[in-house]
Amino acid sequence: MPHDTNKVHVSLRHVTKTFRRAGGGQDVHALGPIDLDLKRGEFFAVVGPSGCGKSTLLEVLAGLTPVTDGTVVFEDQPIHGNVPDGVGVVFQEDACFPWMTVSDNIAFGLRQAGIPAAETARRVAAALELMGLGQFARSHPAQLSGGMRQRVCIARTLVLQPRLILLDEPFGALDQQTRLLMGEEVLRLWRETGATIFLITHALDEAAMLADRIGVMSARPGRLLEIVETGWAPDRDSTIVETPEFGQVTARLWQWLRVESMKSVGRMDRR
Image (tube, rainbow, N blue to C red; front, side, top):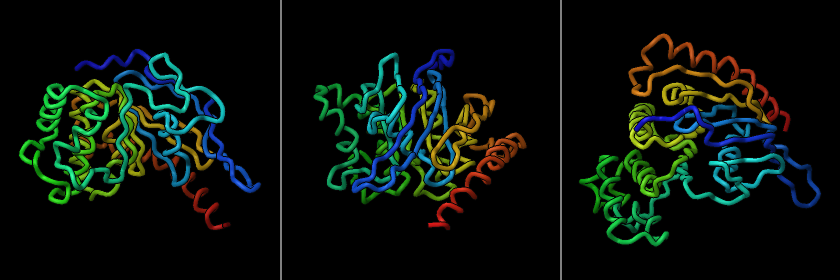
């Protein structure tokens, strides 16, 4: 499916998030201010040191956390602490229901939304085929590897046909080789669905392989220091990690993150 990257799909303006501490404790300025436009159909990744507010930023985009100040607009509609239609989220944690089969796990959201049974069956069958899970449709999560369970979680999001997919370190618990292969799966799904994808990750190689653009965040309070454009072709795969250009992208990311990570470590040492 062609990607129309000339149109703004999501817009953040002067977004900040401060967490209030109960009992009169000092407030925590977690995020911002951040200004960012996500282009329709692009793959955007965010990297940053631990505790910089990456997950908070994703939760703001998902409508799970209201902003303290600023605006978030998705498809010309403001997000006010509510999950908008057309947005799907995949978290790092294994969110499969262990008592359900793979098919029932994938169908869960559709059934909750009241989608007719015939349409649910059609979408589940298509997702099973797309994710290479057809022969495991009647299996339970305990019978699957970690990578396959994460495929089930991705499939459960895909059947809802989101136009914006938010990935919260979905491969963090997997080994390096499996992460690269799962990255190829996500790239294939991105090309086939035409969705806008927003990924947060600690892994520089993962961000560099997957993304069209990569936002580098500062230590808390998280701000965008730079946006790195990779220049990759849409039909890229994991073989790109063998190229000199890939090394140049990861080196540029590390130049920023080394300094910011040292700030985070220094802050933790002073506690």
